[in-house]
Image (cartoon, rainbow, N blue to C red; front, side, top):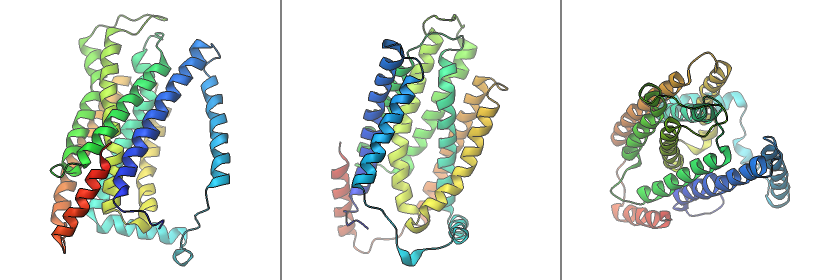
Length: 309
């Protein structure tokens, strides 16, 4: 709609995760640690700083961004939009699989967001939350950079390497389960992070690297297989169970052991790997033949060159 080159799509996704979710998040974690610990302004101070930055961002957007009113000829009621999205999900197996894969991964990721702090400090150990968060974001940034290079290789398919990503991420979330049985807990209130906590931190960094690979890769798959006119509605269909699951986890967080929740997330990710394999088979069956293979090859080469970070 804006007249940009189609080859910029994957490049934009990778840059957004690398710079936005990675670099900016690292700086945010460091600033939060300085405000809360170094300057002793309390645990609420990072949220106050975030509110100020959000207000600044809102002012910049209002003053510089033009409003996107969409295509007036395509205005449809909410009910019709949901009907079109439901029909697309039912009629195309790839869309249903992509939605299920994203829901499983996002559900595990959001659960991890709420559980990593009590997992690393089960006895209220004094851990540097800001620095740990910055470390997670660094791992995510490394993952997004790796995703860009993977997508730039002609011999590597997103559908293929994402299966390994889901298996590795599932294994990384099993680390708290294994350390609970194999490593003796020796922490104390106010003490430093324990050896078991260090092992879990290493596993969590691997998981964050997988998150960095996941986002640009899934965005690319969505742009290829989910119709643009119903994409947002289709994605909202699958975010409903994700939000319900996360709310249930938070409401019952004290009713289940943390290791059990991490084990459940690991199972979700293994199921996502199985669905990703099924998606690859479905995509191969429905892959259309190119009208001009030479032109398609030149376009793919141009996109691969633009992805290198």
